[in-house]
Length: 328
Image 1 (cartoon, one colour):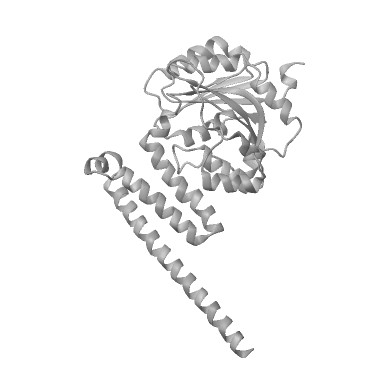
Image 2 (tube, rainbow, N blue to C red):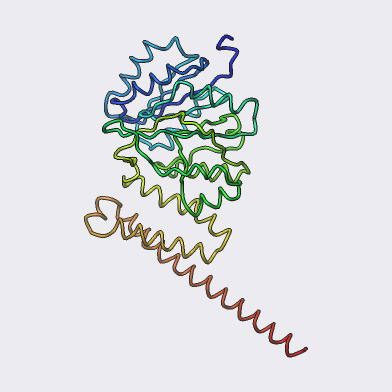
């Protein structure tokens, strides 16, 4: 079968200062057993020579691909916007996004396509990922919850909003056509946390998240934990995710509990960020600090208001019940 008879699969590669690892990533795409691949590299204003390396690599290997493209941003925008730029450039039916330091197993794309077959109702599917140390290359263990995929859609959503993100983003394979139709893309208001909001949007659109029970992607981590997980921009993105995605879901289920949970989270991050004048000046601007304090005060006021409303309602129920009993 000629490669043009196969569905086109887009492989967006997300880079930022990826010069030390990008060739290994690109080689893993080149070595895919699946042939009809569109390669897109989206760089978020790297300050090293990532772009030069990519250009030289593509010059030497471009004949292997249906098409190749490099997207360069003049400013650093964060991973969510970088992913959106890459996805907007995709022409394939399916997309296998990969970071510029991760690696695809040779049969990755072929295995994904065999699993999805002719299904057009599947927005995405995940595989297991093999995590390895960026320091010595040894396999490390991260607490991904693969049992999550055996749950119902409702159970998945509930676990996601109460327990947080527990699934392997590097293992995603996306139906880009369906995702565009659903209007689901990365939330650029949250610059350094692109995956968790997307999972919630997919689940809220009525789709269950599915898993291929095979390792198809190698995920590079530092000392067993992603270095981004401890960065301050990432933690600020967590706060935005809590406010924009987790809190609305909590509120649907229990407004009083939602306020209490939000107050706990805000209190935790205020203490973490604002424990000294130095941290205030280095981490958040004075405006952000002021907004954070105002936000905490606002949620305490709302919490007290909701609790008072609940007490009033309960008192009315008790009074009505007493009146009925006296009449009887």
